Image (cartoon, rainbow, N blue to C red; front, side, top):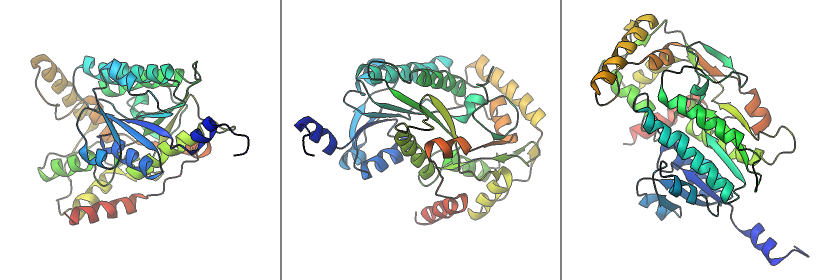
Length: 348
């Protein structure tokens, strides 16, 4: 460029540097590989060694997110931080969720501030607005939930507030945005679909409530696209998403239980026919929570009040804001995602 300094030329020709926390997880790994394919220089933060990712050129920093000093240090030299990592689950000690989801996120914010990172894209969850009611075509005007009976969304809500409040903080005027993808699934999913198939094959799955509730799911490729779109949108002059949160989904809500039965049929597993009322499921969940806590039992209770509500209520979200502000449009449909999943499973 005529008249440009050597430093400017070097900056413009250098690959953009991005940190992905939780790079060993389902979303984190897919996001990191997509960034790598787009020419980014990628650093990943996780607790486990990742020789396959290292072999592809991703720098791996091994540290626990609850190690605030290490989490902060991982941000050094980065231009964008995609904070994907979290302690996920329906059960456990509040202190553990708080250490990772709240303190860990604050350490990332501190690192972004101290090392003048330009952008922070935070992976949140729609559960931060949990209110025990149907969420039908819900939008971002919903307030944060109160008295959420689950430590995961409770701590994620605290963390999301901190990320959004950090937008514009000096000295680097950090740009932040939070995404709330709902029920991430797709090829390589180690949790959602495998867990449904496992419980159904063992006869441990029941329809909760009327069985007529609609939910959003989001293919992992669409979630990756949303993160990339959000990073780019932080540079927009109009409808800038800075300091805001957005629901992310496939934008095609499904009838949950018929869809699950379709999934089971394609895997040659008997459909779910037995059901339990939401009122009874909530009662059972409460009793099991009390027992698990009183006896300090290991593992998760087979039912909790939070899970009962999630399985029985509507959870689908208006994508107007994400389309307008992030230029996010899902490109992998539910049908295509299912066919991809089945094809991958048949190759094993």
